[in-house]
Length: 326
Image (cartoon, rainbow, N blue to C red; front, side, top):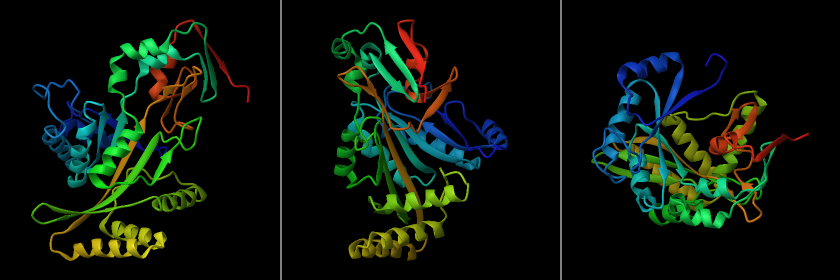
């Protein structure tokens, strides 16, 4: 932390308590990503639970995290089995003031990747496989293949449930327009008697984010990530988005939304939703993954996407690895 690096922890929350959270905060931790979903096997949950039924546990642990002075965000792994329950999770995040954002990882069929790829350059290293099995057969037998979720599945469910439209995406290493990560941003006003108003931001918001990042780069500062917006910042961001839209309808919707803050006890929060889809194996045996990989790690001196770290770092001798000369 003393080197200016933001410290965040991914946890299932099972062993978190007031004492160790306090120690983590004193050591420099700023945020906990709380991973609770319906297909986890947990000692604090009896039997299978739906995503909605798990919201009580999410509420309990997120309150503990926030009371310790840390930011709390929610994480789930999304499967075909739980895809239709996604609106329950999003609605919970919108209405829970302790949770800043939601990070969703779509289930990926890694069995098909392990069995099927022949060669691919991944972040500067070439992986070549000598013997390739039939990936179609492997995928057909894989439990993961039946549970895999795509970004298109997510967009369909969120648009139908909330009318949400993503404001930006990360493409793949093969195609910029192939959405691998998608981003949503929403402002929520909590009113008395458990009533809520929403202002969903659209694609124009990407221009504001891009400008802010350029300013941060020009000043030599890291891109902000995971900050909790104050009331004044939320209001300013809504007005800036409305002005940048150059659309009278959006301006009117923004003002009508912000007028709700005049009600006694009203509070405004910013909510960020991020969805990421894992890699896949193409017909030519090459791995397609997120462009420039927003999630990368170092394994044995090699830069590797986190999602592929266990796959590529633990390969048997049938794989050859060479570093790109350039």
